[in-house]
Amino acid sequence: MKKAAICLTVLTLFFESACQNQEELKQEKYFVEGYQLYTEHCANCHQTDGKGLEALYPPIDGSDYLKDKEKVICLIRYGQNEPIVVNGRSFHRPMPANPQLTDIDIAEITTFIYNKWGEENVITDVKETSKILDTCRVQREKTKVLN
Amino acid sequence: MYSALQKCFPVVGLVLLAACSSSENRLPIFGERDVITKEVDGKTVTDTAYYQVPAFQYVNQDSLPVSDKTFEGKIYVTDFFFVSCPTICPKMKTQMKRVYEQFKSNPDVMILSYTIDPAHDTPAVLKEFAKNLGVTGNQWQFATGKKEDIFKTGKSYMVVAQEDAGAPGGLLHSGHFVLVDKEKHVRGMYDGTTEAGADKLMADIDKLLAEYKK
View (cartoon, rainbow over the protein chains, first blue to last red):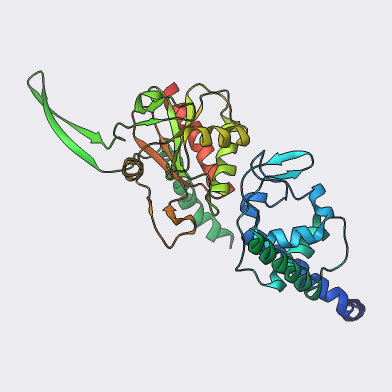
């Protein structure tokens, strides 16, 4: 009887994991690694719960800034020295650039942020992220030349 | 099994007793100490001289003087940071804010944060930082002054604060919170970058306040 119960559990587990297709596994990997990267590179200021710190560091959870994902992706790589307006409040501390983060790192952080606080349930793929990062790199170089 | 328990029990009892009697709840006093002998009424008495944080003089976020005198009759928590620090400072300020909120209405407790980047962190910059952190009034002082003096003051609290080209932001400093009593004795060092460190500090502040009630 006990043996039968164990078998049933194992079988259920087997089918469950089989049902979890490649895409879901990939999303889980992105989310978990994104969470680790977020903890290491972002949570100091934006806090583990994504709520930010007073008027010093803006929140990510519930932030209206999330509606422009391309801007968010560029911001993670290049930082920002100008004030930023989040939910109608202005924040003046510069955000440091993160040149040490690779494209896949940023894709994973973005997936984590949007799945956790952006009411999204899809992956922000590295291919998509690389394209966006490339565009903003070119744009930044152009503005540099103009200045 | 039962007899083994019985055998053990007296020992356990002793351990518990010892634990109780040693936790008289006084915090340790940090730093070197000297034994001094002096003559009082013709008799030789020995006394212990504990290390004291030396005098200092800086300017605060309101461009007013802040010195050791500001903290007379107070216990205070101190730390070293700089406004543009990208690494541990935000963590430290998150935790120090918790301490601030916890003891906000207590006139016996103060906080003192020294900047180690005075060239950037002028009183005006510190004022804005404090305001943005949600800090008002005089209970939390932010001190700025000459860099060499501040580094020296850091040493006097037994923490590291120095220039280091290899560190992010070019400055190296410890993430400690230091607890100082009314006699300027260092009574505790805490990891200011973790919630657990700040929790321990808050518990010890209560213990220290209780020492003065006796």
